[in-house]
Image 1 (cartoon, rainbow, N blue to C red):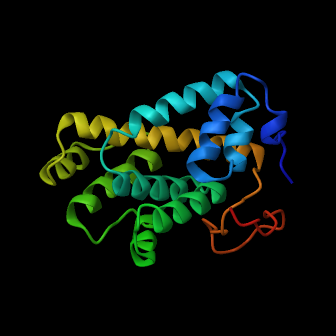
Image 2: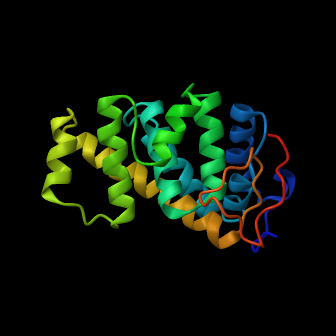
Length: 192
């Protein structure tokens, strides 16, 4: 049961409606996470701006791989479910790749370095070693791209925290970060 109000798109504050309408035009639905963010026009606007800016960072497959790894590290079932769905249906990642991403890895050597680094950033809250930095640089990432990896980790950590606090009902095919379900797990999702 969600702990914070998730309004219908039509019940959202007036200042949130243009952004929620844009989400609807893009996806054909407004996911519960967006509707939750929509309860605060300031938070929704800030998140939308961050998301728009980071859409120019890295490539979509790398961003989705990072989102999956970070959701797994943070134990956020909502975000893990959403990004697993987006990764397979929009970024066209194979299910085997998504499974590797959950472990902070990838079949692609360059992506492996980025996802591994991102998982370490999330797990250690930025306290990575000099060797961790050297490894991602050896894979061909420059300083600007490393900043982008950290920014994508931060963006996803925000939504992981928000959805965990709110206990947002999962509206994607459910993926659990932990193999054992807690007694207060979410109900089966409505298909997006």
